Length: 111
Image (cartoon, rainbow, N blue to C red; front, side):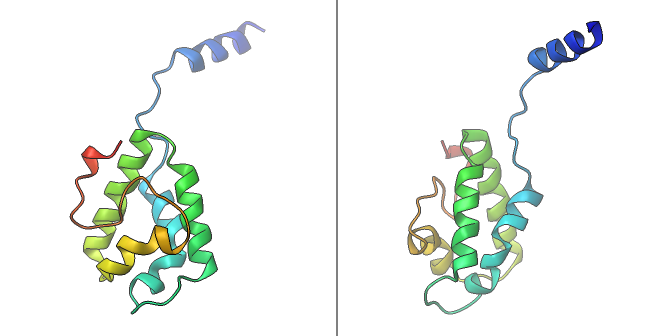
């Protein structure tokens, strides 16, 4: 019983991490959108929109949004994507991300 109490107390007193989301999680979540983002337009496929909804749900805190933004910005710089499609992806899927998918965004200013 003492060990369980100690473990619970340790969890409560442990510093909260800045962000719970990892870049690996962001990339694997958004992977269904890659071919769309490298294409020429049209409507995003449903798996891509489902991925965007998952990303929206996973980025509920400012540190998570900033981490996801930075990850997507870095990935977009390494992979040739259509910037206009990336910018309009959330709207095309009928959701609102609190950060753009862009290579020029300052992710430190995301709230």
